[in-house]
Length: 237
Length: 139
Image 1 (spheres, rainbow over the protein chains, first blue to last red):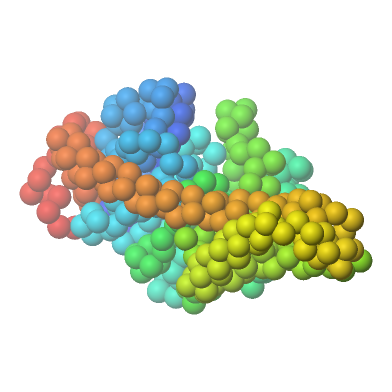
Image 2: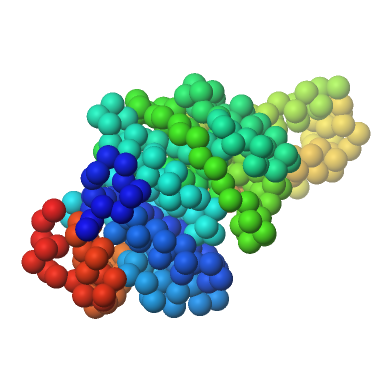
């Protein structure tokens, strides 16, 4: 009864933790979490100080809940979720997943299957391999530029540095520490990968650009903030 | 003019120190030395305005006050960067503190809700709101 049709290799996903950073997503959160729970039994939602009933939505499900006492940012929420999941017994694989329902569970499962092979440490979703046409043009240009500007992205030949869907194996999670609390965490992860020797794979995924996820998506102007955060280092107190 | 060269050089040095430099002790020490030098120079400029004007002419600025203004702009920029970095350090500590609190509370809350990290066997049970602890022990 543990087989659910999504796990292609016949394994159960008891060693998998799905980490969902949540900030004011009450509208869609419960259905996103519940569908995730049908494929992955272990889900942790990190509430980043929501004020719209997102917490209650999580409490109605069987997902674990971690609540930031104050709003810290998506990067911080991701790190908190990974820290929480890492401490749970038997956790070996960690899936990062957006709360707005833009990611497909089939893609997550596909990436997980790849992460389970012994010569892969980390799998990133990319929007540009097969389904590029579904990404709005302006967004496509900006995201492409973001990859080209990052030396690590070029080194790893990544096509999409800012996809929220990732599968990390335990050794990576134990080594990684996200310090960029805001949106710059995606670039931070890529530059971390560029410096490390982890074996990274990209898997084509498609994104559901619904009106809801579009309205929640980060403004392209935010790219300026990200570049600034990344370039000024916090050293020398 | 010499002053243009000096100002551009100062700005570039500041940018380099804050963006690229990786030696924390060196950066911190140079910030403090810079602060002391700036204070001494200010006292000197107030005490001997004629000397200041002479220096200003030497580097190609009309008046001593203009020279002080230029120096102020550069010092302000360095100060802003310094505060920004300081803020990031504090922000990081604050994040760690909040995270620790969140994780500790989460352990209690989720245990109270009867959630166990579990192998997939539990999915079926969980749908009925029941978790069999014997089955969750080990995959």
